[in-house]
Image (cartoon, rainbow, N blue to C red; front, side, top):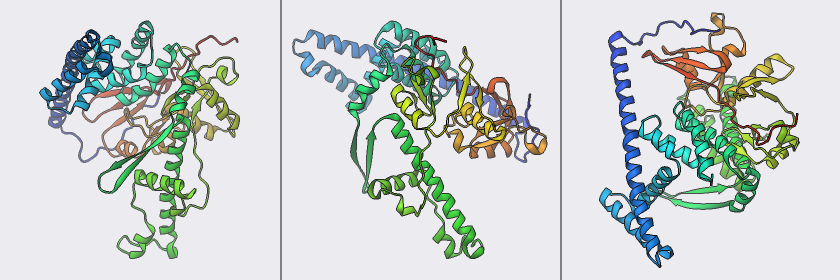
Amino acid sequence: MPRFEDADEVSWGFTPAERSRTRASIEELKRIRAERARLDAREAALLADVTGIALEQVARDPNGSDHAFPLRSMTAELALALKESPRAMQSRMDRAHELVSKFPATHEALSDGRITERHAREIVAAGADIPEPEAREAYEREVVPLAATRTPHGIKSLARQIAERHHPTTLAERHERARADRRTWVEDLPDGQAMLGIIGPAVAIHAAHDRLTSCGEEVKRDRRAVVRDLDGVEPAPEDPAYAKYTDDRHLGQLRADIALDLLLCGLPTGHELEQAITATVEVVIPVTTLAGLDDGPALLAGYGPIDPDTARRLAGTAVGWERVFLHPDTGALLTVDHHHPTAAQRRYLLARDRTCRVPGCTVKAKHADIDHTIPWSRGGPTAVTNMAAVCEQHHMMKHFSPWRFEQLSRGRMRMRSPAGYDYVHAAETIYYLPRTPAPF
């Protein structure tokens, strides 16, 4: 099993005193975070209690349900006392009431400091549409222990998958109803800016964002190539020619500029791209769903469950398929079926890792580096047990800082921090299980 790489000592590595101070600070920060979670839970309980009082008053008022004046009054009462806007206070009261009344196990985990308020918010958001208390209870039993080991962003997609498994109505039915709400809107912003929002099917929205990302990366590559090839010599940064052919916009700015080009012109003409760049959508489709044996959901990378009809249409137009084999009990990725070893390794790692392997990092694996955990220069093999997707930022951190990485079994990665902490990160598990057993 590949072990921690034996990197050269860096000049700025911890002294024993610095390591001791850092560890003491980290432990104190962990205690503060747990205490903050407990305070958030107490605040949620109090907000839920006064919200309940207002709802009881609404029920007693013969005309209360028309305007909910008791609820408005309680919101104003709290907003003035706590120096918040009524709109913000109403949102906090709604979230607290839903958490305490419908997700007691999540509220208990928050009270114990096992999860943070952001974890609780993701759990509630994913399970809010589950109508039956028994189904919500089963959902909480499964998702809360996972949340205690992951970042809030890391639990978001998993919570959606688990909630889908416990929802009594199929995603296909809910997707059809939700499609009626697709729309666009404009929100004016200060300083001559405005925001254009689009609500539509998740596959289409993610595909559009992926196309913008690909276009932006292509702009960057195109500009760098022009600079390199300019008169056969790369100009110096102070040369006027350098500024002419470089593009200092970051990727978010490029996405916005190209989106407007595409909407207004039909092509990203403002960026001199001659070839059409299409989006790549990563979807995991259970074979029983693909064959029409059941209506279980497929999984859209970076989002979560999508309806089966959309998944089947995508499969029907795909140039090629990759068969991904999962462990039947754990859902962990076992292998990817492909004939060419080098390509298969990359495809396997993209399917296994899905994002940069540093916990909390959301850079997609296809936009990250495929890194040798033990460097090739030090004898590290080119094998999936010694490779992982690591974004450029964390790749540089790995090689030029005292962080140490180690590959464990089943795609798990151990990272040892300069302060001496070990963090074990498992590759994202696919939590989809069919509603009914497959007939074979």
